[in-house]
View 1 (cartoon, rainbow, N blue to C red):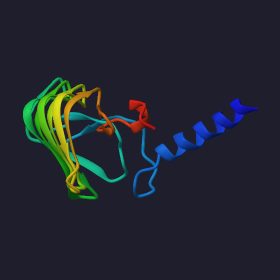
View 2 (view 1 turned 135 degrees about the vertical axis):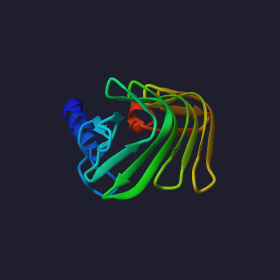
View 3 (view 1 turned 90 degrees about the horizontal axis):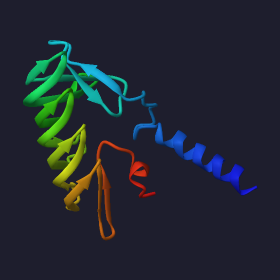
View 4 (view 1 turned 180 degrees about the vertical axis):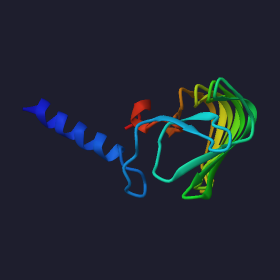
Length: 155
């Protein structure tokens, strides 16, 4: 009897996780191309009306090297990443400026914070230290960037 209830709860949470903050359904992760150059970057959480401009190098059709990736939502600037890309994903040092005003600065690997870094929220909350695969855990502090919190085992 417990297993069917647990499965139902898991389905409910996975359905809720597919909705963005605005209540729109997100598409599965995939590549998004700069319309000017055709250069692609990885999009972990696609939303309707998104577009990008990449100012750095492009190798094999994928963003490579140091540059700036500007995200747009319905034609308006949304969030921004300044730093290094490898094979279309954030890798190396970089700073991501979230549309909310939050910021993550530090090491990236395969499109996720990984290594030493600091996330600073607009409310003053700071998550500074070692990030692993997009997840931060230090005592009672928990944060996730470019991964769902449940992927970190937090909730």
